[in-house]
Image 1 (cartoon, rainbow, N blue to C red):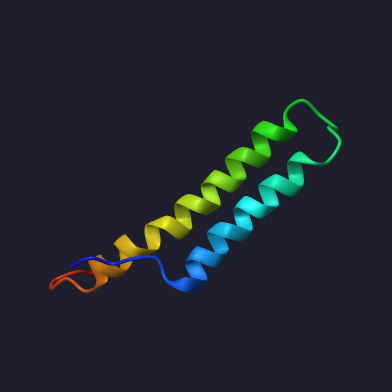
Image 2: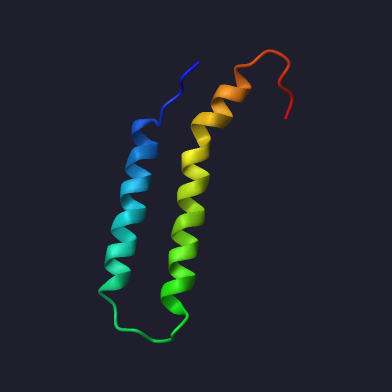
Length: 65
């Protein structure tokens, strides 16, 4: 079974990219800020992008969280 991102999930990914671009336009306050923000964005993207796989697992017989 192939599961894809929903429209709201796609929109969330786009908003995360928008947040990154807006962040890059801010003046730098600390050398670690870019690394920390990038990691936070990537963590959020991974959570959203894993949702189709999780839905697919839920549809399989014998799945128990």
